[in-house]
Length: 231
Image (cartoon, rainbow, N blue to C red; front, side):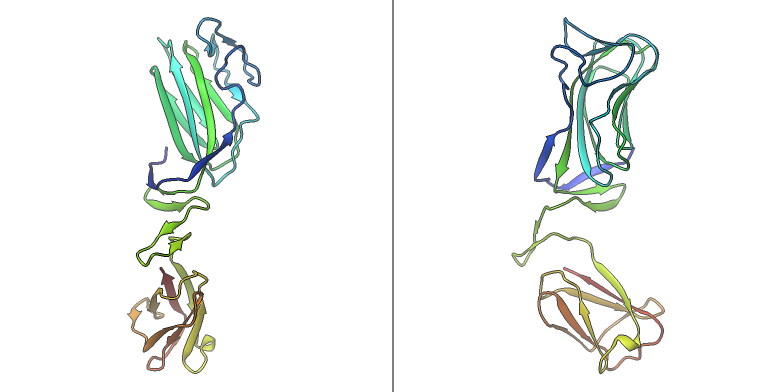
């Protein structure tokens, strides 16, 4: 299971993807033999076997962030695994819990029990997270339309530096004119030579909010060099 930390609060949730997640009167919209509705407590009660309780319409889209919430109660034995979109969470105790995950597939929501699981599943909710920035196993993941306040007062929808390569033929009179499309006039520019060494250009001249000129007059560009632009 991935280690996920929210770095920037997400803006909102999408609509509820689960139908009848509270099991108020029956198990409609859910499939799975050996699961019954509890008239005393509500919820879905597991009777026997390892057949999953599934809602085929509760599907997710790969590369999007979601939050799954549910509760397990009245369990004395066994365990149950909640699975959706390539993510899973195993539960072997009574609890109210949530799973924050980035979907890696479009697999539908399912609760897979051990044969002896005797608990009740209830309060199931699955929603897409809109916006936000997350640290997933050490890698920053930008999730959708959120924007971020920068020190200069402007906002950004991208935290990822832009990296590109160039050769001598890309220069005009020793000037590299580079379009970064960051929407900000003053950006950070780094130049690396074909040995991956950082070099200092003669001048870095912003042209507009999407273009910068890099003067390399005193340098000889041999092989393939790299330009890295960030806010």
